[in-house]
Image (cartoon, rainbow, N blue to C red):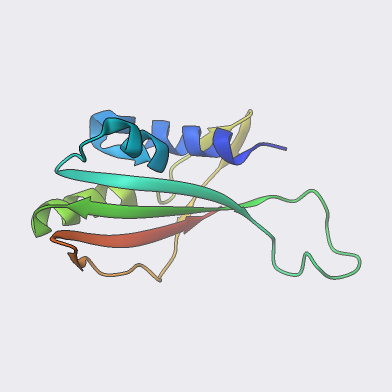
Length: 125
């Protein structure tokens, strides 16, 4: 079984890390000053559908990636979201296991956010 920390590291690496504007929340806090555009990445384990039922499969892990695309300029926020979208269908390897994230259809639109522009995207695998 792999950890959230391992999955976060793998997602950030696949997205190109800070060189392409992908950061964990901890990395952003450590910067002190926010970049003018970035993707804030969170990875959480989720319970598979029906995992609380008697006789359900145990040991099955499912993951959810939440990405908040943020920028000072609307067009740059759109570019960060486009970069985040590259995660869809890409091969993600964690602890010698391959995963293929799928984008959710419930993305929030890019909208004003405290003087910035932001929107969220969700991927599952």
